[in-house]
Image (cartoon, each protein chain N blue to C red):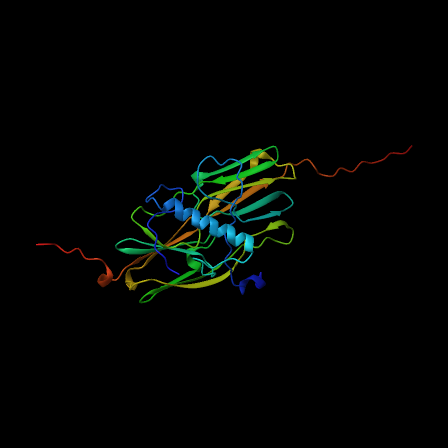
Amino acid sequence: MADTESKELKVRVKQELATPAEQTRSGLVFTPSVDIYETEKEIILMADMPGLKAKDLTIDLADNTLTLSGDIEPFESPDEEDLIIEYEVGKFYRQFTLSEVIDQSKIDANLSDGVLRLALPKVEKAKPRRIEVKAD
Amino acid sequence: MIYRRVFGLPGWGVRSPFAELEQLRRQIGRMVDEFSGTPSLSGRAGVFPAVNVSENRENYYLRAELPGVVAADLDIQATGKTISVAGERKIAGADENTRYHRREREAGKFSRVISLPDDIDPDQVKANMTDGVLTVVVPKAEKTKPHQITVK
């Protein structure tokens, strides 16, 4: 991707979630940026969740709704005093409705360097079948 | 812009009676930004990456969220009072058979210089990438550290 190599990254303010459905504790909730793409066999979802550890990430799939939620532990030690705050840290939460039928038993999740890669394999059902018409 | 606060990040326990007020102030600031449509630069330099700076007696701490950036693609340099962070965020491109449904993540180069309020010790700067968060620990120069004076 040659065109992206020269591009300068711009600051984007983290998207704060307005009304999280499951807010039970105080604190900010952000929606992670995602890429979703589809190959022949699977749907791949990539989500930016900086600071998230694998044990704090919950992925839930029920009735074609995929829910990602992650808790962030504070990185600051208590004796630190803030000088500049340009971004806030908080939980991640985002829901997706999946259109294709997903094979729930084969979902593969991988979290590295703050990026989640979720591979959702499609169920092998929708292969087109050719019906031959016989004529006597 | 550098302003001092006497409390920590929201939701992690109140360290002073003003913590909740300050959190409210920032929330209102964000709401105003959203309504007016022009992002204000209060506390934001508008340069990628957004950086949080904190300090204790010995060190300054710089933190930036850089998901998917590997340590090899980062270039961090320290001089008298400044730290510069440059690098590139790469996103593996999918092949031609894939169809994108959503594309929100961005790749590209970035570079930023952060000035600190006082002299630092450039030789002792340590940087660490964990879970997509860059932490730079910048020791303060010996002469700027507070010294305990014993009363005789």
